[in-house]
Length: 372
Image 1 (cartoon, one colour):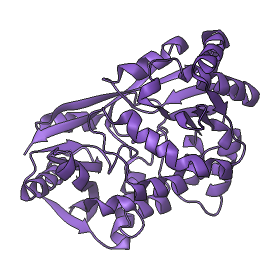
Image 2 (spheres, rainbow, N blue to C red):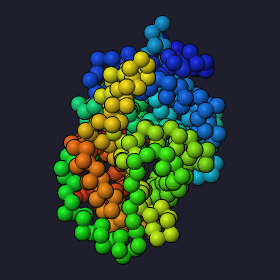
Image 3 (cartoon, rainbow, N blue to C red):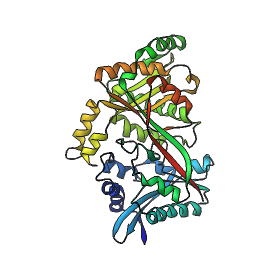
Image 4 (cartoon, helix red, strand yellow):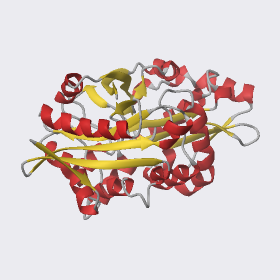
């Protein structure tokens, strides 16, 4: 018999966060989160997502053994303003026991029904910048700090419990040597001249901060038409600005501005922190921060985290300017491999962006849906 307990104290939340550490302790592919970072994400006083969302966290036990967890989330902007009657769930992990996964999912469904919601979907986070999707292909590749990893049996549990695929995401990779300048060096010069554009490069994080609000505004505009997108609020912009920009080598943030100094395109590339996080095992101290600092400066693998282009300039070749700048820095830093974060299968425009780099789809992940 499965017993559920709600995690309400800091001690409970630590158990919630640490459960995957035991579930994946023998996996060479799972990348642990930073425990302190996860705790902050679940802190209603620190994470502005809680200004517009509610979340409850549940632990599943069999006898005295912790065997699963799930977060049940309601995003009020999504429900009230966008009129999407969705019960979200994420951070969903469990042993290979159908009784365990059923109990956790039924608890999420119960909360959804009590709030008069129409369907549940997961695994997802609070917003578009959180992790998304259960892995269904690519179990033999290391995860990243911005994706969930899971055992292959997870998909069978969704199927068994009557869930259907809602969205499909693809993850691609390509060697940095595929970013051949002949694909974009001539085009980017023409585009800059035609539209009066210029690139902006950085060497200090402090120089990026004055532009960060514009960047997140542009992020909202770029992705507004994608299904499931919930725009970032002003509080979330400030939170993510402080949380993420310091993690990125400033040389990996590229802007394109017009003649009025208006930001019309941006891209963020992250160093690959996976191996460093595995060494850190969830802790910054005593040595974790050194592993992360070394990865920030010296990782030979990078992850294309976000690309945004103002709707007015989409399909006009602006990304050639960005890629030209990345080619220069990748050569200087001897980057070997480029990875991309999960991208919606329906996002044809983003696939067109990468076609010249001969990308390989090496992972697929999904969210699943069930009517309530």
